[in-house]
Image (tube, rainbow, N blue to C red; front, top):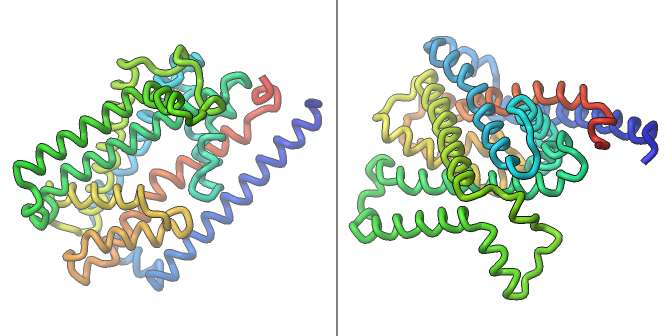
Amino acid sequence: MDTPVYRRLLLALKVGIFIFMSFVIYRRLASVQSFVGSLDLFIQRFSGGNIALLALAILLMPLNWILEAVKWKILLKHSSRVTLREALRSVLGGLSIGFATPARVGEFAGRVMFLHKGERVDGIYLSAIGGIAQSVVTFLVALFMLRFYSGQAEAFFSPYSYVGFAALAFVLIALYISFEQVVSWLHHLGLRFDSYIISTEKTPHRNDKWLVFLTSFLRYSVYVLQYYLLLRFAGIDGRVFELISAISLVLFLQSVSPLIPLTDLTVRGGIALLVFHDCGAEMTLGVFMVPVLLWAINLLIPAIAGYFFIFNLHADDTAQ
């Protein structure tokens, strides 16, 4: 493609991302304000909280995305040699584009923009593997922690249910670890994936996948800790395991909700209210606003930072 034309297209993309990001931020904050009635009420409600808890939750945000960059670097190990700094730039740049697209579908495309031209298809495939690892962690932790959710799930946890849980965990992890073999098996059954698979030499080896899985768990743990700190900041009390089990259930429901891409913040808050249903009427606003705070800390701020990487992206970088 002619370089001047390509540069104009890249400039148009940068401007478009900025406009859509601004629109998304405005709409989502407006939806929150319309739900709670007044953001002043929210500020008054949280003004008496322990500011150290809020500060610690914010300080954990860089660790959250550094872990994601480490995971991305491991996934790219046999396809594209990148430094941790380059991996972080790719992750945050992808987040910025995903932030401006419905259901964050642009996140995969945003990440691979920072890879060389011949590595971008590989990058989409490898990013999907990382997403599968994070989804498996989210599901398994929620299923395990359901045992501690307000004591209401005790009746469902007999010795047989533990055996069933262990079997399901084994199957899901085995499917993740043997993902390429499963795809190959489906291929032999007549389902063609030629356009969507990459050479096994470029995919993570088994030990790499275990590292990705462990990194996904560590990142999940950081996210849960941030949520817990913000609940305490909002004045929500409860036993540690009960709160963590409720948080894990919220995160799982958010991950499978078809409404999250459409309304996002109000649905996040609504799911939290559903799970923390016995917190008391005086705590309703706090329960609803914690996911909003977490969204601002873990998505809004990093997405804005990621836009600077997009803004500084040159045509020569993306055409390589």
